[in-house]
Amino acid sequence: MKFEDNLAKLEETVRKMESGELSLDEMIRSFEEGRKLVDTCTRELEAIRLRIEKVTREGSVEEMKL
Image (cartoon, rainbow, N blue to C red; front, side):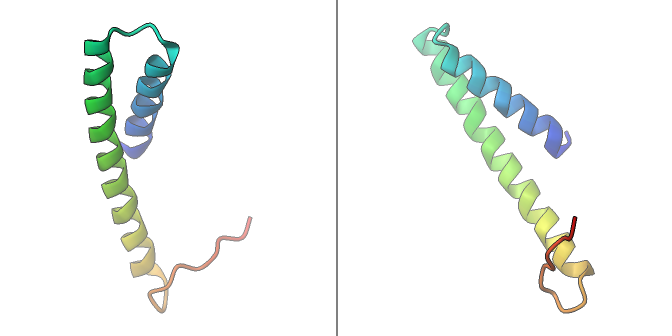
């Protein structure tokens, strides 16, 4: 799954949890799923950061100019 897909799934999980419509059991399952998604997104972001460092000249991330 792509980072964007995982992030969208995490946002949807949070929305459901904030809605107040879930039972306690559903809330716990959603929390567990959300925690896994956060870990996955964090690992993906770290991999992206490392790729950026690799392609920059001196190994430091250069500020992007818009």
